[in-house]
Structure formats: C-alpha cells, structure tokens
Amino acid sequence: GEGDNADGLMTKEGADAFGANVAYIAETWGVSINTAVIEDTNGVDDTYNGAQAFWAPEGFPTFSAGYEYGDVGSAAGLVDGRTSYFFGVQFAEVGPGTFGASLGTKEATVEGSDDLMMYEAFYDYPVNDSMTVTPMVFIKEFATGTDDETGVMVKTSFSF
Image (tube, rainbow, N blue to C red; front, side, top):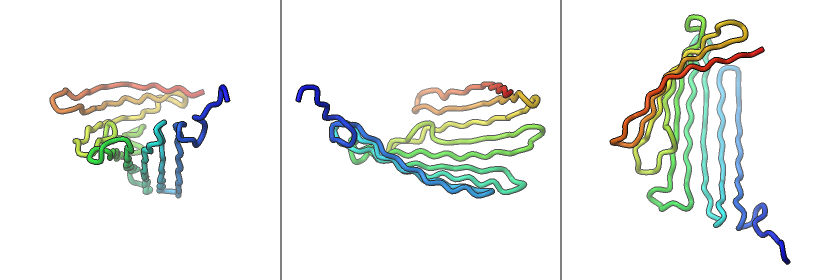
C-alpha cells in the first residue's frame, strides 16, 4: 500500500550490518577475535575478520598486536582484499611516566598495493594526581611521490 517501506531490517533493500566479538582476558595476557558482515543496498556483502592480542609479563614491557582481513564484495576479484595490522610496545615506569611506541598500517591496504604505514611514540607523564601530560610524535606515509606527514602534539588530561 501507499507509504509501505521495503527497506527494513534484514530485507534485500536494507543495508544491514552484523558483528560479533569474543575476548578472553587473563592476568597478564588477552586475546580477542571479531567478525563483521556489512551489506549494501544491493545485497552485496563486505566481510571483515580480525584478531588482537596483548601480553604483559611482569617486569617486562607490554606488547600488543592486531591483524584484520576484509573482503569487499563489490570489488573486482584481484583487488577485493583489505588488510590492516599494528604492533605496539609500552614500557611502564620509565622515569615517572610511561613510554610507548607503535607501528601499523595507516589505513586498510588494498590487495596488491603497498602498505602505507604510520609510526608513533609517546611519553605519558603524570604531573600530579589530577593532571597528565603526553607528548607524542608521529609519521604517516602517503603514496609514492607524496611527502610523508610528520607531526608533534601534546595532550594534557585533567581528572578530578
């Protein structure tokens, strides 16, 4: 009838998204896996799967890593894959603060393309019980022939 809407939940015309995440966290380590299916209005599915983990052995730095793979349903077979990954390390008690560094893909890498990377390093310094200062430096890679972007920032956090 007039005013009927055929693009509701779980119809071909509707753009639905489903996701799930399962995680286990122990005292010094943790792991999670996730999956998602995102449907466009033409009924074509994009699927994404990922895994993340951290390890924090006593007396050592904390390590974290993650990997994600996606399949874009509407893309041609040779360029439908997307990958992302990261690796990080954090050192507690470096002086009065915490030092950390990480690297990873700046964005999902299209199958057959070069990874565009991002690097960062930070130092989280507690000034007092209610204020923390975090200087950070980062580098972002861009396509060949384009200059990388380097930046410095300082974040100040207050808690009361």
